[in-house]
Amino acid sequence: MEINGFYSVRRMIFLGTFFVLFAAAIVAAYGTRMLGPRPDPATPTLSAERGSILDRNGKILAVQTTLYNIAVTRSSIPDKKHFANLLAPVTGISEDEIFSMASSGPGDFFYLKKKISESEKTAVAAAIKQGKLHGIRLEPVLSRTYPENRLASHIIGFLGDDGTGLTGVEYSFQDILSPLSVSPAEVQDGYNVMLTIDATLQYELEKIGKETMENTDAEAVLMLAANARSGEILAYISEPAANLNQYSQSTQSQRLDRPALYAFEPGSVFKIFTIAAALDLGVIQDSDLFLCDGGYSLTTPRGEQIQIKCLHQHGWLTAREVIKLSCNDGTGQIVEKIPDDVFESKLRQFGFGSKTGIELPGETNGIFNRSTYWSLRSKPTIAIGQEISVSALQMVEAATAFANKGETIKLTLLSKLYSRDGTLIYSHQRKPITPVLSPEAASLMLSYMQTTSETGTGTRASVGDVPMAVKTGTAQMRNSGGTGYSDTDFISSCIGIFPADDPEIILYLAIVKPVGETYGGRIAAPVVSKAANVLIDSLGFGRGKATSVTHTGLIRIPKNKPVVLGDIIPDFSGVPKKMLTPLFERSDIIVRISGDGYVVEQSPEAGTPVEKGMTIDLVLE
Image (tube, rainbow, N blue to C red; front, side):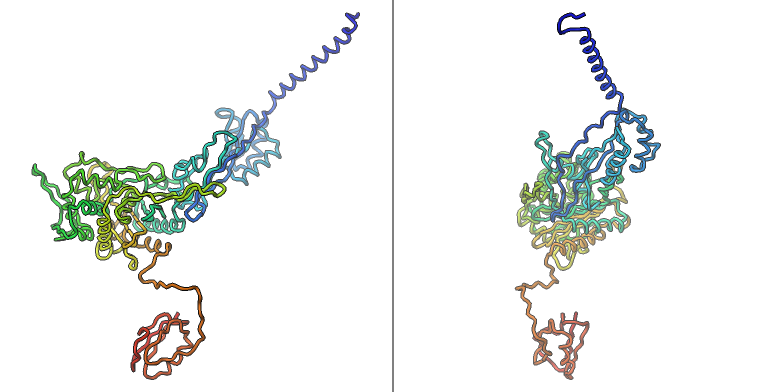
């Protein structure tokens, strides 16, 4: 039977059968997708590179590297035993543990292992391919390698698992090292950060810091070396320190950035700011005399007596001698001449009570109460470096005033910023903060401190042939309960500014809780001398004992001729030993030679008349 010429029963049956089969195929395809292993998500790609961190000479201190997380989706694993069997050898995780993690846990997604290396990633990828494993993918993550391990670790800082900085410059320069992208099409690589520190100096001074901790059994050592004119920090020491490549295994003490975060009472080093303030304010003169009878005392209108002990009865002293001998009594008498609010204002101009603004997170303000809250003994106590807490950074920044005709200079750790292609983006420029002293007061204080290094409490900080301006300090630490001072816990410190006649370097050291000897002049000053010698030699400063000559670069080599001795002694410098033979033939003089090679020293000097029976000493090398 036909309905019409086109529609027929045969055709209707054919079309019906086709549609049924087509629908069945679609259902089967969807079923397979639903019940079969889920396809692995696409592996994300890295589109931006985090900038490197370098020292002032371009030495790499932190550089980006790519590590991988092994990400797993449980429901996409068809055979968990097979999965565990293949991955155990290449991950270092036991087969049972992998099977347990793949079988159950919170949620459907988990990380089998995080931050595996490129070689581990290659082995895992091979296992995935060989076993045709599903439900596993290798997630690239940005990470860091720190080639110098613990060097300058408190400055450099550390990255978290999400690739963002947690401490140090890695944290404070996060948006510079790894700029935020507005859109996937506008991804920008990070800038390279060049620090002001010199890695070689940092290494040498860290070594001295560690030796100091060991020699004194101290809890910690802080040391800063800064360019006195530019404010650039050349070395930044905080011991103990963490290895950045093993940061998770470090202790809290190793992670603590003490120069920036640790506030402490500075002790007698602080007297340089007190006396300088008095000189600048004109309340004392260089020639004024103060009588030290063994302690400073003050009787209040109500009959209360304030007493601050001095180590000795120094007798009559000038302000120079107050600094030289670190006299508490003299300092108390001097600061008594300054009104409370004026003294507070002057110390705040130096920067005490405020952050320096260094490029590190969490910097302390220190503790410096307003003068309206001072007790009757606060001013003389603050004047000698107690009842005020400072940071090592504040001490160094305040000291820049002495090196810059009374003007403080902002400290910095940032030297330059470069783009990925090497374009210079930023270069540090010297940043004056505020004039706090007259040039005359600043120069006079340097002179006082130089006397201290030559004949006062800071002689052990002297290097001998480069003039040093020095002040030492020993501060009792407060008891852990917050009331009173400890009889056993001290901070021993020393500051050195050199060369004293034309300052280039400020070096500050604090030793926290040394055991045994505690006086700064005895244990801190020698360390400053040792560190200063390293700085002087590394930076090429002229030394008083060194011979400085100018030279054209042209070396003339004369023909060797035997020495002829006439009426005066010639200059024997550079004469080889074999050319000195004629001298031994003389019976009227005695010649003594030590060493081999060429003459480097002689006595008497050239030009001395030759006399019968005289002795000529020659040193050869």
